[in-house]
Image (cartoon, rainbow over all chains, first blue to last red; front, side, top):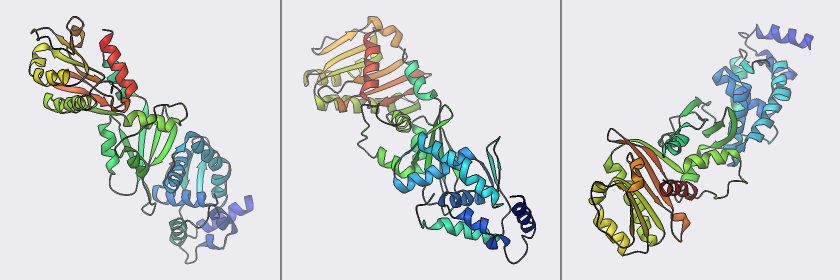
Length: 131
Length: 233
């Protein structure tokens, strides 16, 4: 993990370059392979900073407006747990966000405008039901 | 007397947050009239539909789309009488949907709501209607209406008021002057719906400097509670 962190740090510093470095990074595509993670990124692009609790609510909100069914406290907890144990670590590994487990604070890193566009477009139309 | 009922509606520890990308939704105004304070958070513009998070005691108990709530409040509002099988989120929501809060209302406003309840009792034509008039001289102006209610229906009508005037005996109407002292500040109507419980409804208003604060509801359990409070005084 140390090696990939270094390469991401180098790439983050080259945000002004024409070619967004994330686009040639496998971790980036793995991070984007989940619909829930794309939603998280899309939300963070607008809000910059939020909490795990709020992210769980936002994902529940997407679910409830799609299905028409109220999301219960159990649904919310399940999404919360998935965020903490699966989604957020993957986004951290890809160098896209910072997550502080003690406070639950989640922050987006500075992203190349082209990368941000891809993320925005990736939630525009729901392609599959993965999560 | 009825303060706990009014306070219960106002002070429940629940927080509503609407997430939306555009202008305030109508439901926010609607919830405000039901005594709900609602915060708002912004959603990215391409996120399609607004939704509301419901928290009770700082725990998320439900997340529901604004459209789904709007569908729920389309009249007639039908809420399950039995609450055991439904999730906490719906419980909190129904609790709110069933009580319409008001404050700063005047006598004219309350009279309009009272008419609706009296009309309903008249249309069903049976059951028990209890009314706290504050004083009998207030009842005086309504006496012809209540004479009609009592004589043209099988309604069992109970009037609670402080005796500053002696009302004429009317068949079907029972007067309660003794217990009325403690109701002096309250404008209350409670109709049990008679043979049609879905028609039950009630109104509780507390007067302060000519303005009323309180709620009205179609919920039969709350109506029964109000009715018992009048009866047991």
